[in-house]
Length: 352
Length: 185
Image 1 (tube, rainbow over the protein chains, first blue to last red):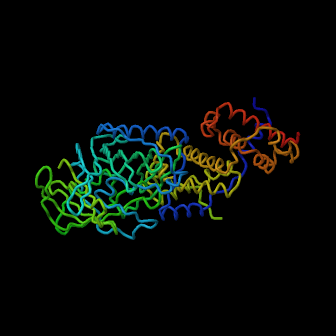
Image 2: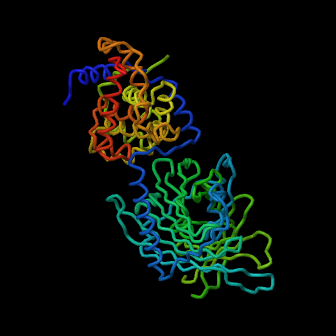
Image 3: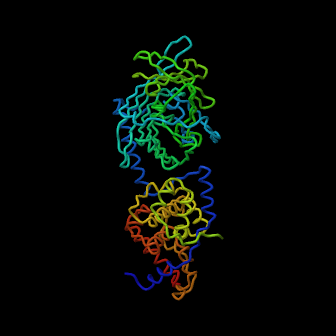
């Protein structure tokens, strides 16, 4: 029962003066946001969020695995101590980022400006029902081919928050530079009309000394937010700015389709950026410059295909890419760096 | 110290402001601060117990607000949602500085009486000091319940404790305040 003391105490507590919000706080906030600083604040109970993320991860991975009928390897290797790896969590070794387009991190400071006008004219309507099978291989100077990995991208109609979207599932197997075999499953949602990124879930197993790593991203306004999680409940928040000047932004899964519907020509030039995992500051996005350097007929399993030949660069990394003239799909991409002992890495469309 | 006016233009439209803030508009964020900054500062100050800590909370809230607003479903009042988010940020800070963790409820936690008798209840300074002297675990429950008006179920959800634990903490907070303010020892 509330007595007089409690009533008077409550009234007194409610009438206690509080300081006003100083202008200096919002000035500091605006300055920090203008410089790209982002943060995640808790809006729901932390435990509930964790469970929700876990559900999304399971769905995303299950969807990816189901799409190709493979089993995600979860080989456990706990030799790496602590969370040193979390500080260097990066997408740099992933499939498409180094397959179709170069993926050279910009370290702490992004370039001052993109290397060309933003890529425009991508025809989102051409994305529906796509199923792209790719192979990664090494070709040595003698022309010998050594298979290294494979991937599959499938695109289907979906709804995201009640709006039409494309659901892009990408599952890949490849060898990382460390020699570790990895399986990556990515599920991406983009708006169906203009391919704006909405959300992304990535699951990679194993990852360095961890049995798996999961990245969950949402794209809100000019930012990417989300969370990384790995073994033992280790988690890192994601909150990074994606400056509009470096757009359009693609994810790994969309990289082979980045020029679909674009009207290329002999003097065409454009730029886009690939979004990284964004856990660490040097893996937020990768500015890519593309330039048509010629036309070639490429020999594929489906016969000769008319292609535009492009030079693709993310300084200092360079690749050559062949894009099918009929629809803009990338059918081959080759690393132009000096060949390793295994040769130059290539990325080849198997079902052109 | 320069502060924002509390009076907003008649054209104030929360839904529109939220949409613009979500899209990263600095003006919209400033407008939200002008509209709700003082209210949220009060919540933060009551929970943190110091102006400096409250300003840090306010800073964190507005730094992350454009992205956080994507989780605001607009079914409830914006002010209530903002106050709850501010409370969460403040509580997270309290946890991280280790003051709201394990708390003993022995009488040793209750500060010794230092301010007169019941007549001193009218003395707001004495009340403020008595509340500030409470252990965080008791103070935050007292503030959330008696000042901010949250239910014990809501407090339990915010603090990740049971409803019963919230009730117990409030009871102990009031008992401690009664002793402090009435001079009983």
